Length: 151
Image (cartoon, rainbow, N blue to C red; front, side, top):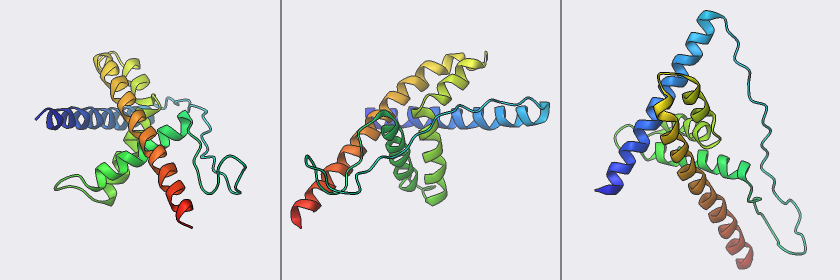
């Protein structure tokens, strides 16, 4: 029961964040105000050639890659979501998961006086998503290592 309730809370926060982002983008378009994009460059760094300490495919365990991993985990949750699950919902969840994981959602919520109360829960959800992304990156590295051992 607790897991189901936590899932509902996470989904509620993701829906609230998506609605906020959609409405804030529409308001910015109508009023003509220009939002400044956050300049962040995140690259997945992979090893193309084996090095002395590791061999085969691996993904660097960095915070940027954990955020991308959070988006991947969110995609799979959306893909397998009961009743409404599918590729499109997976993509929507992936975008929302990435925005929550890298802090954009919490900053947007904190910037609006009506939604300041939701900034702290969004930060907590971001921590959970980053942990899930970390686990996803580590799982990919573990699987790659096992495949390399089988060769």
